[in-house]
Image (cartoon, rainbow, N blue to C red):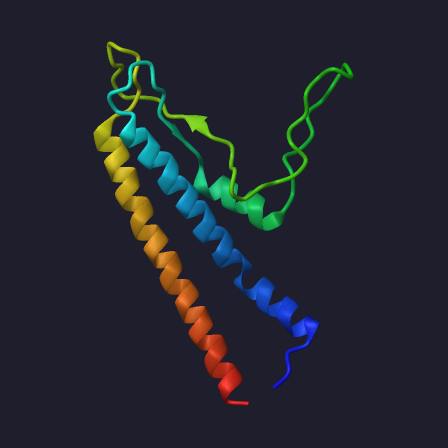
Length: 140
């Protein structure tokens, strides 16, 4: 069976949401691992991003809404969405540290484990999609 360009495009769009989720989960794991690695660094500020917001922006491909500008020198949000580079935010600590470090190991370890489980679930969903597509193609 010969695959046409239209069929390849449909297959690519079929897997795109799972690919985006996997990329964002991997990026978030890196960010949290960086927080854990810098738990003893004075003045280090823990970072993270909102997965849901980043995923929706990446899947929709829409840039953030333009801000009202009353002067030409006012900055606007980026016009392109890069799913591998979501906007990193600072995490608010429950209890401030004397040295200015905002990493709380309990929070980081919980988020790391949660993200790892969700990453594994995304891989499982991707494998099932591949198996389903393979089965559909073999039956023809």
